[in-house]
Amino acid sequence: MHSALFLQYFFSGLVYGSIYAAVAIGFNIVYNATGIINFAQGEFAMLGGMLASTLALRLPLWAAVAAAVAVAAAAGALSERLFLRGAAKRGVFGMIVTTIGLSILIREAALLAWGPSVRTLPFFSGSEISSLSILGAHFSPQVLWVLGATALLVGGLTAFYKLTMMGKAMRGCAADRAGASLCGINPDAMVTIAFALAAGIGALGGAVVAPLTQTHYGIGAELSIKGFTVAAFGGLGDSMAAVVAGLLLGMLESFSILVVPEAYKDVVTICVLLGLLFIKPSGLFGSRTRLALKEY
Image 1: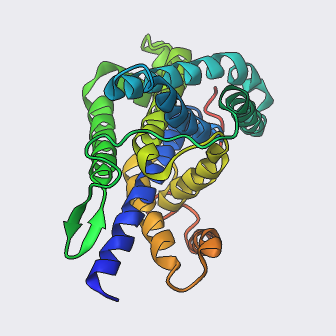
Image 2: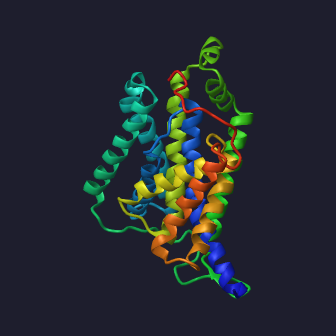
Image 3: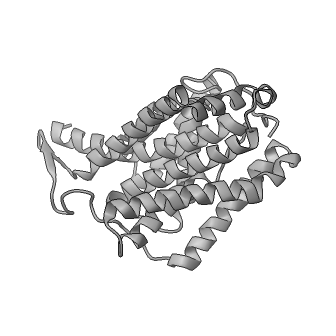
């Protein structure tokens, strides 16, 4: 394979891997706080792209993206308060089913609001025809924005959990909800913040990648599946592992079309995931965990 073609597939894998990682990080934030898998996470990535594309018609691009992230975060917090908190008494699987219903609700609301048309965002820098070149491979400057946003998410989350009181409180609730309550921490508030943070992160990923991949109301389900695949691939609960697993999955998808038709690339990734989980059920970097509601 020529180096230029190799790099072309490599950059494509980085882009898709980064958006998968952003969705998987949202999965992990909610999982750490509650012990459930939020299958509505991909819909918030869709909302980020769709809202930003609409707001960019009247606002500067940076303001449109910031507003889209804020609205999605508010929607995440509201959905937790309205739909998920009352479903906690049904147990972990009842809550997971509720998140699936929530994803359908958000998708249908997006269809009513925006219709079935495909939307996009302007490139954050440069234009559609501008490109950078490395060893003969051409890629959009937007790729650098995608990679920068992913790095910012990982670094920001690490600092948030280790350096801020709110981050430490969320970690405490995840480790021992009853103990955190005795220390004066409001566990319900921490769970709401976790949902808002996960939704905002998903929306940022969806907005940053929209200039390259475009977006429409129906992409959320696919992103949820890919995000969960990445979270399980790396090990549930570990955001750094989710980034590594997301990039690996993106590369696998990108290079798999060299040997199989593009329509079958999803089959390849799912087969690899199933094979890995058969050998190491906790994922590449995860420890053995049990899916259980953390006294939510």
